[in-house]
Image (tube, rainbow, N blue to C red):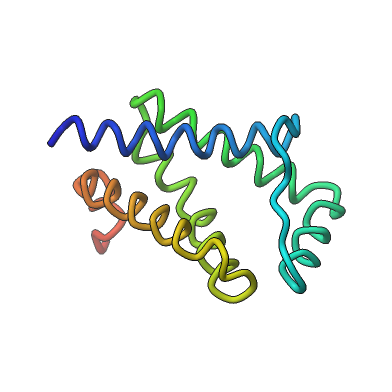
Amino acid sequence: MQYINHLIRFFLGSLFLIAGLNKVFEFMKPMEFSGGAQKMVSVIMQSGYLWETIAAVEIIGGMLLISSYFVPLGLAVLAPVVLNIVLFHLYLDANGLILSFVLAFFEGYLIYIYREKFAVFFIAR
C-alpha cells in the first residue's frame, strides 16, 4: 500500500511540475479550448501576472510533493489549483472533466493519507 501512496504522490507532483514548467517554457503544445473556456484562458494569460503565479504555485507544489519532505504543504498549496481545474472543466470545458476528477481524487486521497498533519487546522482554540 505504501508503494501506491508514493506512486500517486510522485505522479501528482510530476504532473504539476511539468504543467508549471510548460507554462513558463512552453515546450508542449498548448491545450485548445472552445468558447468561454478559451476566453478565460486568454484573459488569464494576458493579465501579466496571473499565468506566471499559477505556474509558480504548480512548480513549487509539484516539487514539494516529489521531494517527499513537505508533502502536506505541497497538498495545501495545490488544493486551490485542483479545485479551480475541476470547476473550470465542470462549467467551461467538459472535455477534461474526467481527468480533473482523477486529479481531485488523487489530491483527496493524499490529503486523507496525511490527515493527521491537517488535523491541527481543525482544533478550536
